[in-house]
Image 1 (cartoon, rainbow, N blue to C red):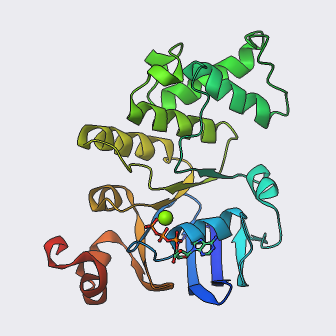
Image 2 (tube, rainbow, N blue to C red; image 1 turned 90 degrees about the vertical axis):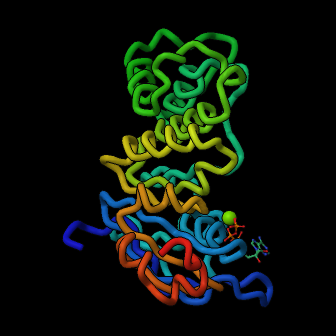
Length: 251
Ligand SMILES: Nc1ncnc2c1ncn2[C@@H]1O[C@H](COP(=O)(O)OP(=O)(O)OP(=O)(O)O)[C@@H](O)[C@H]1O
Ligand SMILES: [Mg+2]
């Protein structure tokens, strides 16, 4: 990899009162890379995201972000440094329009209090910023539509828009297409691909079509260890991965 690393996961171990969930996880994500983490249910993928984002500390090992050891930094601090996480549960204000949802995120990032009693449309610059985000997530035509009237896939897109409002350099996406129809998934692939053109992304996903379409590199997490890590073609052909996870139908 020639580009500089944005994220380095170094020998991460995580136990929950004696239950070892992550044993020794190592990988590096490049500054402009789409990196996927796959593996069976209970493999430790979400736990890994919790350690990366600072929800809880690793038992041992280190997380480096932009070359700095952030292992002891809070989740808030990591977010301020440019690491954003999109949650499994849709995390938007249902009554607010698509624009106002993104605007609330933008204002919060800029340190401005969102005033629910006063429509904050006086700051044209922040509105333009929010409109640009709506365009990135493909919701520019739904600017004034309340979130609750959007289709499920659009709500997930809006959630990603709120995530983008803090201008991240790395986004962590945990199963972004879970529960989506085939058409919604296709749209989500396009949108994620567009959004991550100039930022790094780590994506946890069970849908192999999504993984193999989007990812520059894939790592396979199995019982707390990385079984294999490489380009999609390498992973597809890896016998260990086929035996443990993909099965013959993916070959
Ligand atoms: N806070 C916690 N306390 C105790 N055990 C936990 C905690 N979080 C996760 N675990 C355990 O760690 C293991 C891995 O869970 P995790 O949610 O990381 O898996 P996953 O790979 O994300 O699975 P899935 O694909 O189903 O989302 C599971 O056995 C789970 O019960
Ligand atoms: Mg999970």
